[in-house]
Image 1 (cartoon, helix red, strand yellow):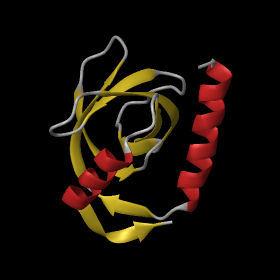
Image 2: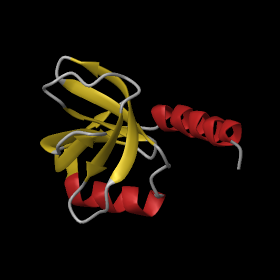
Image 3: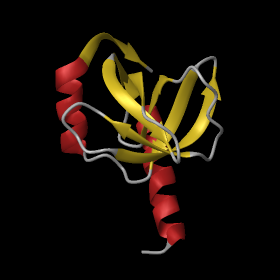
Image 4: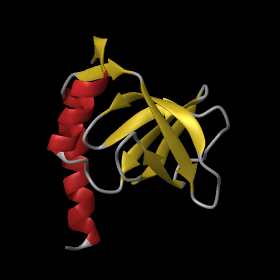
Length: 114
């Protein structure tokens, strides 16, 4: 599959995902940027295409990093934004809907983020 097809598929999924309700949650996790050491974080928002989490130190957009959620293998992602000690990342490969639903069932919060 060409990079253009992958990028196009990601953009469509990301747009569709942004239209769906996002569930507020608190997931303990580890985040490691390329060439760096892993640090403890909290994922606040999870979708098929990415996540937001706490990152006290600035991590620049375009940086490759890996998110490790409890019981799962590390998920490669790319930093899209960093602001006010929060980071937003896009997964390199879309998260499986089954894995996504299992995570939501385990960590679902009280509110819906739209």
